[in-house]
Image 1 (spheres, rainbow, N blue to C red):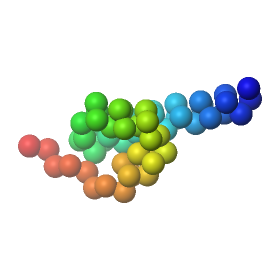
Image 2 (image 1 turned 180 degrees about the vertical axis):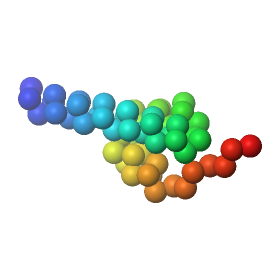
Image 3 (image 1 turned 135 degrees about the vertical axis):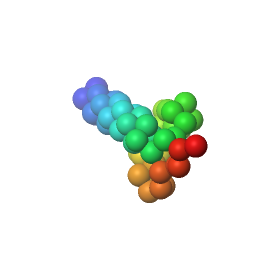
Image 4 (image 1 turned 90 degrees about the horizontal axis):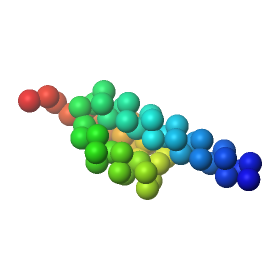
Amino acid sequence: MFIWLIGFIIWIVCLILNIRIAQNKNRNLVVWVILSVFFSWITLIINLILPPRESY
């Protein structure tokens, strides 16, 4: 039970971090939230590595 709770908390933290990073880098939030739900920490790493998108 306790290990499941820790995993769930880490998943929520990754989701929140991905949302904030995507907003700061002018990315499509819907895409990054969906990716983060399924691939939480992998998406976080990719989101950190990619450069920001330019605004039009």
